[in-house]
Image 1 (cartoon, rainbow, N blue to C red):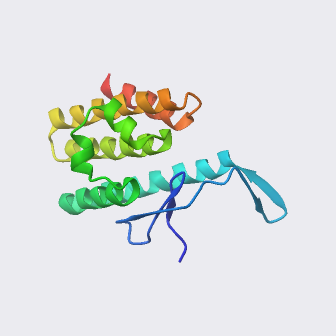
Image 2 (spheres, one colour):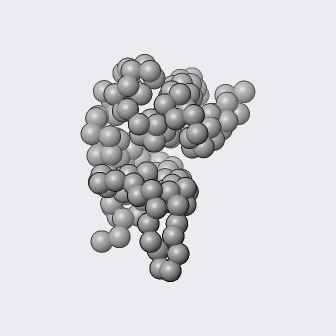
Image 3 (spheres, rainbow, N blue to C red):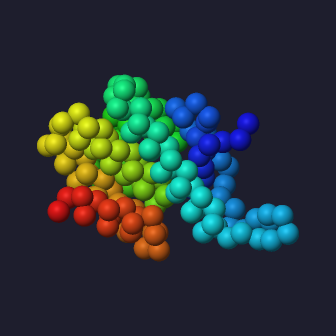
Length: 163
């Protein structure tokens, strides 16, 4: 079965509610008669993540609890840590637990999406808290990998949102 989402070493099942780890991210792979770089792979993963988040936000319009459940399952299945548990620690500790910048960016994106859900529910103060936490996580991801364009883009997006 073809996964719907691959996030730098992770894939989302077609049910949109769980992630399955992929063994490794290829640095280069043969594709047809050409070769694609890791960057191309990551760019597709980012698009797929954005599509997943869009589906979660669309679901939130009709069933906010189900949308939160989707995010919790994605976090649990991808990072092997409960969202509620990981959300209790500060950004530096979370980054230390997750080790890799791409995992921290993924978690920051989940937290940002929780902020979006809060905004949809009219909980502006709680949404701002999620956006600030996501920004702190994005900075930690950037400190783990200074070349992470995903972390840089997330920082810019969250800064603009918080202005």
